[in-house]
Image 1 (tube, rainbow, N blue to C red):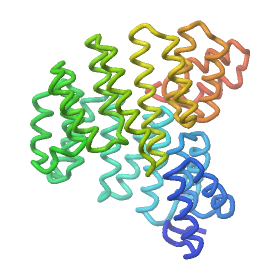
Image 2: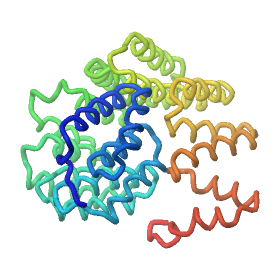
Image 3: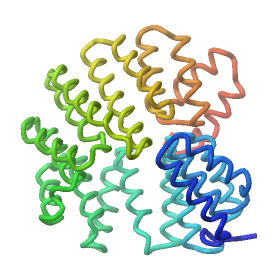
Image 4: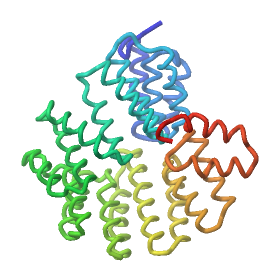
Length: 363
């Protein structure tokens, strides 16, 4: 019974839309989506929305389980099948399986060449995995074929930064046009160039512009704090983060975005404390972050690593195992988890953890 994304009864579609909107805004909304999925788990549209919400909530293992059904029951509608492949790619990438994500995105591009999200995602993953030469080649093709596409111009600037070509990155950003220069993501990217050159005042001005554009984007503040820490200005780095956290605490229009940004900034705060030699302070900050947002998988990983650095092996192992329970797999988790299984004599779990990865060329 192949039904596409749109073939869903009107009343039930309304229920799904309401649950999706609630889940996107607040953690409690997931309960509504759980109920809709339980009642209509066999419908592709419901399955797609549910898997996407699970991904956004950091429940990667469950998201993978729900989305994998699309592999055995693909949609006859190429555009929707391509969309499901992109979703599965996002899940794979979040779990640290970049090679699989790239393969899925290549398939999505073949099915729906007019959708540029797949090639844009490919370039972003290639950048994140250090494949800058391949990323540049694909980004240049994307920009050549779509010269007016904002995202293509932006990602070529990000590729240039990754390759250490700051002047080229700034030129790419300028080429986006005067109207784009005050956009948060453009200001943040420009700030990254100045940050790498340790042009602190110029970088801070751009990061501040980005922060003013979107209070829910924590990356500008995290980037500014990282730069200040490199300059041994740890107190100033903490001050910048604290000011952003205070501003966030007054916001209530998007609880999920507020939680996500808050835990991201608390992680950045913990990194500053770690770099200043205050491991106990870093641990306390990460524990506070989890109290605020237990869905942030990156916090679980940072906490486990900090606990390990403090010699708290049992606590670290508990944090690693909690992350494994939520995510299945996660970047940076395979090694520690494998050592836990080996030490505890769980050889079947170890084989399951490593088996498929050892067959992958990127392993």
